[in-house]
Image (cartoon, rainbow, N blue to C red):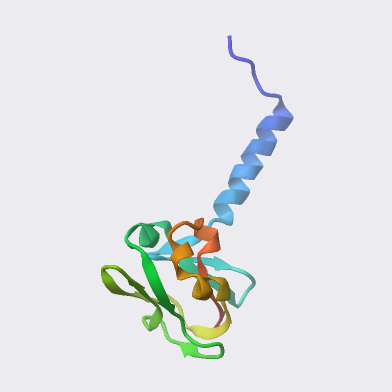
Length: 124
């Protein structure tokens, strides 16, 4: 006979699962999005976008302070197969860039999805 969890453990598991669902990144094609506050958005490369790549040689990110409109290029990733353009799903001004990925673009392949954040935008 299987051992039953206490009511407290069941409640903790329920709320943990509910919290993880509410705070999971939203996916827009090859881009994931996570809200940092009401107007700050963190955009990154999704697992699906990561699996489509070969050995990455270069990342071309926008510049800090640059304004992007939905559909504009968010990043150009150059790998063995050529250049891959990833578009931004939202408009905003670039506040931060992931300098670690720019310095070592090959780490884009091995990183967890949360470590593959590309830019932080201040939404319009």
